[in-house]
Length: 213
Ligand code: AMP
Image (tube, rainbow, N blue to C red; front, side, top):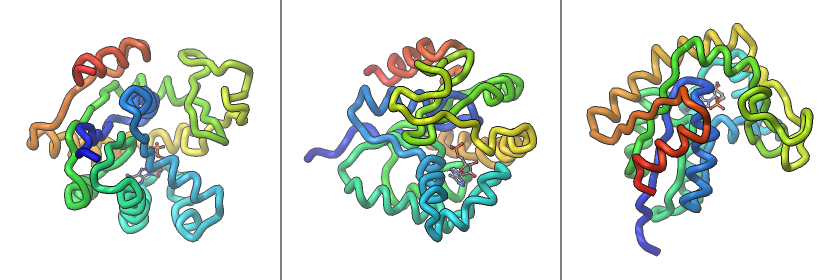
């Protein structure tokens, strides 16, 4: 199997739409999407040791300690094998994580989906996540096919970290820690900036155009 051309990282504030866009990209390129937040939520639901350690900090909107996140990421990358491509959503979120990722794999593209704080707050209030498959909807901008139900039949829920206090904390962490990751990849000349404000379909087109896919 030849080395994959696309080892993509998606960066951006909470609710920038990076999870949704990661789904589109993964589908278009036939690659797995790796959402670290989703992997952690699955651990919490399973009641595993990792899940127990992560759940409280996740509910409050804080960052899960590196030791836990890195383990989850490392296992996933190993399972994919060296040549496998992927679309990463929600990792790395700190400069330290970015450096660790560099030791595991060579990233080829970093998409920075940017939106303003006030838009983040507006979007998160209407966001609903499928409790079964993790698909994300917005009551107004991207409504589910049936009230409170995902296309897979799963029930939709408001994430515990989409409360106003947790949203505030997540935005602060984003500005304090994740913006450094944007700089990190800019210095490496890997950063592709995308305006995440327009409608989902338009953002998708901009991403596809910039990646020439
Ligand atoms: P997300 O679904 O990407 O918004 O992630 C949900 C939550 O999972 C975050 O608020 C964090 O508590 C945790 N999490 C996800 N990715 C990371 C990461 N790279 N580092 C630390 N914690 C993370």
